[in-house]
Image (cartoon, rainbow, N blue to C red):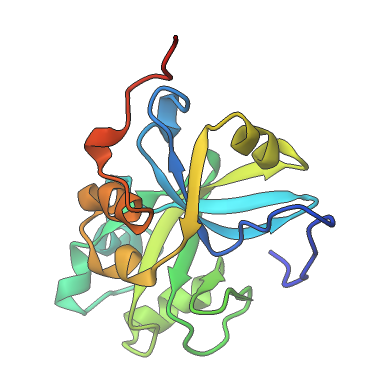
Amino acid sequence: MTTQTTSTPAGAIDLSNQFLLAMPGMVGGEFAGTVIYVCEHSEKGALGLVINRPTDLTLGSLFEKIDLKLEIAPGLDAPVFFGGPVHTDRGFVLHSPVGKYTSSIDLGELALTTSRDVLQAVAEGSGPEKLLVTLGYAGWGAGQLENEMAQNAWLSVKADVRIIFGVPPEKRYPAALQLLGIDPIMLAGEAGHA
């Protein structure tokens, strides 16, 4: 990952640091019912992480696989998340901004790191206090996310880090909808037809 900052075209909406919420009936497959934190959005495309799809893999077992010893008992059972279908063999760490790691991108209230050094710091007890680890990410090419937004596939709202780190994964979708003042029951399973 690079730390380059690119701009969105004039008149385009920058969805960086926003939650994308998959609209029922509009987004299916592995993105159905997801909340995605958009890390980066520019005219070249977008990168985000699904924050509400825990996998069966725990941080403890992940650390074992990469030969790191995690000794913080509460962190051992924390889930590793499905971040999206792109590069599912790579880890992405969304974390509170503490220190600077090899491939960190400053996202404001958060940072995104893809290098092992952040996990090494966590194992040693000196890493970020709050983190969400994913395998893979969600990616969109130039104009693709804008096109999906125009087709009403996603709702967007300014991200709230309290939802990422303080709400159980299964409650993150309704919690993010509440940021928009929407009760999940109000959303229809498919688009209405007159």
